[in-house]
Amino acid sequence: MKEFFRLVGEVQPKYFIMENVANLATAAIKHRPIDQRPGKRWSLKSYETNDAKQGSLFQDDARPMEPEEMAGSAIRALVRDIILPLGYYVTFGVLDSADYGAPQHRLRLIILGSRDWPPPALPAPTHGPGLATRVTIRDAIWHLRNNPGPHPNTLRRWRDSSNRFPKAAIGETYRESFTKKLSAVLTKVAVGKPAFSDA
Image (cartoon, rainbow, N blue to C red; front, top):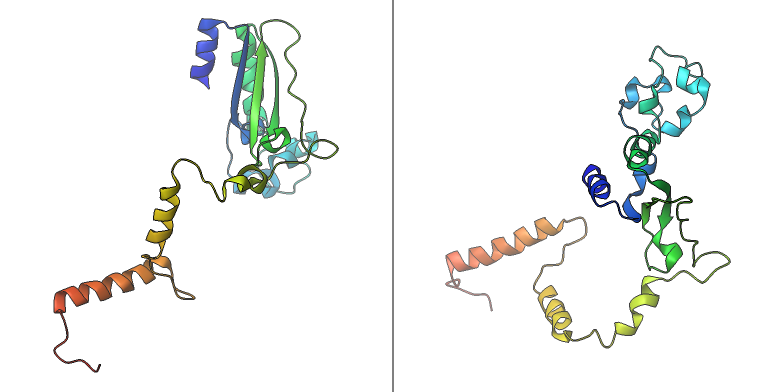
């Protein structure tokens, strides 16, 4: 992210858009192991009240949570220390690609920046409750089932090669099944045909 904003600072575009993992919105700058937190809570959100920060809600000797250990401290520091000094106004939020017509739930943090006030607004969802129906994978690719495109042989080759792989027995891993089959083949190659056959 630092490299991205270094370039924004050099180029000074009128607008920028950045996307990253959704968890960045709630990430902390500093991590404290759970067993060292007051109350040993895994969720940083549970430390958002003043009493929780000071540890009075928890009956243990752990030191209070510091601001840099709280949920969202990373994004706040990014905006405060890097983006605003560049002279940009920002809007940010976590968006789900399924809300915009993609056949997949994919949560991403989106940051929109503008040199002018007001910053651009995040786009309103186009799909979901009260809007267009969300698109499923079936909706997106069902029409390809009989005509997969310019490389139909790829699918046939995949189907043919899948028959060459051993099928694992119940309770057996693929590796165990493959090792058994490989062992049988190597034994046959090493020993050769049996001298006598029951057949």
